[in-house]
Image (cartoon, rainbow, N blue to C red; front, side, top):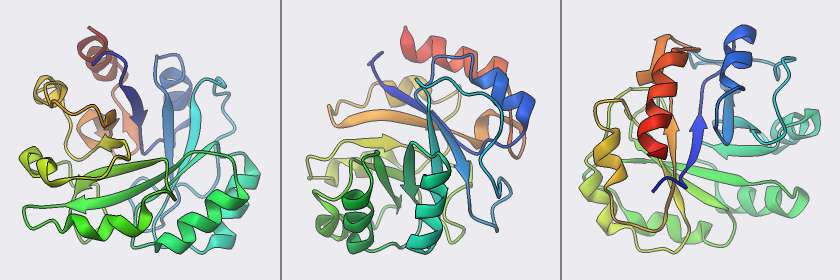
Length: 206
């Protein structure tokens, strides 16, 4: 599974962003959600190679706010709240960039609620369910993924770490398109440990 897309989320500090931009990743996430400990109000001015998609993460934001950030230079968006399928469809209609729709997952996951989004998103992202819309640093029971029946590819998120990456890489599902690395690779919120991410990439790409 060395062809997995890698997304590193929750970036904010300029020097940290520049260090991460030197690594072989595909998406770099910036969280435009004020209650988050990783919130940023603006896209970074640090140079990021075009091979890495600058990805805005939003939680129940207005379409106008999301569109303004796209116009500022986002190359992908992730909707991490309770956004309706109609919003996804409208954003896709107006913008030719990847759209990721995140869902919190637990053992009582109702997979049917994803059905209206089919055809209106490029990827799903499955995170550990929480009232705070992610950021727990805890993994959900990945066995629950066996209930997912749609063809849309997905990112796995929620508590990925050096300790459980190998288990994630052995999930036998061709729809698993990427891994989302965040809080377990931080020295503090919004400050990633670059050495640990390098180690993770070696494991993933091996």
